[in-house]
Image 1 (cartoon, rainbow, N blue to C red):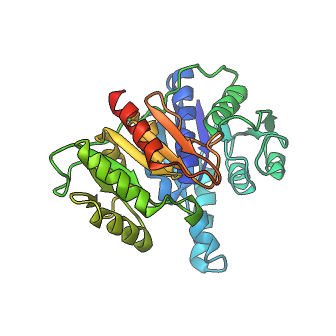
Image 2: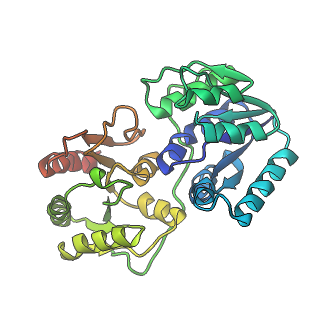
Length: 318
């Protein structure tokens, strides 16, 4: 059997879809799973041995140059690649019009949420078969239940993201254990106060952990550097790929992060993870893991440093 999964973005959503690939591989030994994913996040499905190959798309980049000849050339190449494949089923677990249009381009029985379950109801018009999945469930559970309904099985109770951290070494890593602090996120209202990060980082140093602060954009790097400079011994990491970040997270005894996809990656790798929420509620999209995972705060309720340190002590004892 050949299955194409369509879950293009964002980083956290792609990670939340990993258990679907793991469930399918366990349910149908020998199944060949391809994954259509945004190019920036293509390294995530590659972490899963259940995924045969990825089909990268560049919707975010294409939107910035809709009229460009290069954009339409890449779209044509993607359509040709999809048409050249032969799938028994194409499963869209994203439920958006953009993902439904990609699903519609691929040969095979097209499966997805029904109009009442999809995030964008119009997406359901592009599927051959649709399924009802309650909207109040966590994203991981919704993905798994959709796949189970589409392929006729009940997802196992045990959660398995099906990935492991790749090896990672760097000359700037300290000899002692590190705590990865994920201070960057997609929206300013999701940030945690720099003063709180500094207080937390100093407390982690006292507990024998060296804070390491990854970052992406120039503004994120500047923020990480400011925080690291205020914590003697802390490290603002150089730019890292998603694969390298997975390797860094995998060797850390603790990750603390704001509402960002990398916190979900840490949880998927079974790294003890504490996620901090300031502008959103974690009920439907918080970190979920078979290891230690703790969601703190909520919309308009940023967690206090004392709360985070209490969770930290529990995580280090887990």
